[in-house]
Length: 202
Ligand SMILES: Cc1cc2nc3c(=O)[nH]c(=O)nc-3n(C[C@H](O)[C@H](O)[C@H](O)COP(=O)(O)O)c2cc1C
Image (cartoon, rainbow, N blue to C red; front, side, top):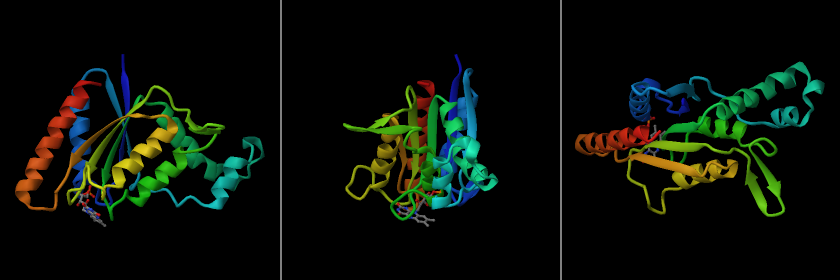
C-alpha cells in the first residue's frame, strides 16, 4: 500500500531556513521507505495572494457561470483542495514568525478551509468533511514556547486542521534554534529522532 504524503513548507528563507532542515529530513527518511510518496508544496515559492472578496465571489458563482477572471481565482483553491484530498498524510513544516504562522501558510489554509468543501456548518456546529487523514507539524522556533500559554501557534494549527476533520495530529518541535549553537544542535537532533519514529509509523 502506498502512503501519499503532502509536505508543505513555509519558510521565507527557503533552503537557508531551519524548518526546511526538518522538512528535508522528513523527505529523506520517507524517500528511503518503500511505499511512501512525497509531494512538495512550497507556499512561499508559490505564494498565494491574500484572500479577497473577488475570490470568495468566484467560489460562490456556479462553475459554468464563472468569468475568465473568476475561473483563474477559483483555480487557486481547486488545485490545493485536490492536492489535499489526493494525499493521506499532511506534513506542515512551519517556522514561528511573530508568535504565529507565516502569512503565506495562512493564505494556504484560507484556500483549503472552505465551508461546503472541507467542513460544513450544522445545527451542532461545524463538521469536518476530510476523512481518514492525519497530519504532522514540524515546528521550528527561535525561542521556546511549546506547552506554554504563549504558544498560540500550535493550537491555531490544530484548530484549523480539526475544523476540516483532521484530528490525528503529531507535533515535532525544534525549539530554541536561536538560543545558541548547543541548544540548536540538541533541538535539531531530538526533532530528527522524533521524525524518524513518525516516518516508521507511516
Ligand atoms: C520575521 C521573524 C519573526 C520571528 N518571530 C519569532 C517568534 O515570535 N518566536 C520565536 O520563537 N522565533 C521567532 N523567529 C525565529 C524563527 O522562528 C526561527 O529562526 C525559525 O528557525 C525560523 O524558521 P525558518 O528558518 O525555517 O524560517 C522569527 C524569525 C523571523 C525571521
